[in-house]
Amino acid sequence: MQIHSPPLCRLRHRVRSAQPVERTELRTETSRTFELPDGYLQTELYTGPIHFKDQAGVWRRFDNTLVASSRPGFSHENAAGPYEMLVASEPNKGIRFEHGSHWINVAPTLPPASAAVTDARAIYSGFKGAELTYTATNTGVKEALVLVVGQFDTALSSRSSSPTISSTDQTWSVTPAAMAGVVG
Image (cartoon, rainbow, N blue to C red):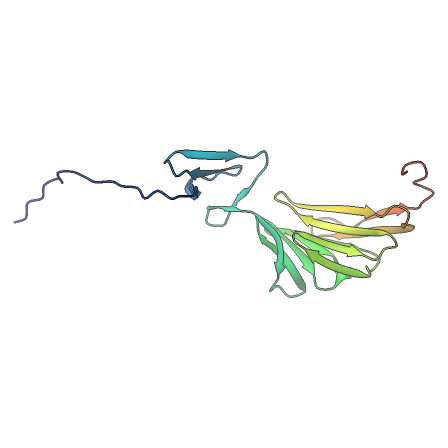
């Protein structure tokens, strides 16, 4: 027969780090908490989301960096987020935004002279003084038309398609005469 008795004492110790250590179990969508070397906790609050819940329900940090994609037809995709921004291998096919089973393609209707990927941006250029960019952000994809003063004289358009919406065109037509008095 064994007799079990409670321990006389319990020793608890904490190894303290010389650097703050993130307590990932305390993450929220808009905050992260660190344990400081003195044992106190410090929470950083943000006005927008910095984390998303993965399929297992764990808060993960966004990583909008466009990295090589293994998906057929796409050269790059954002590294980590609740949605996917996929950059097509062929520049005239633009980008695809996917969230769950929903998606939308957006592409320039004029073939760009070149396409490049930098950090979180897909940049389409060669439109006579204009470039079209798509940037992966924590809340979605941002589209921007960038005009070079004194060099643009073109009309640009993009086409969007999705199984749940009908195809739509967005056209930008900008000439130096249209901008007279606006710049300079």
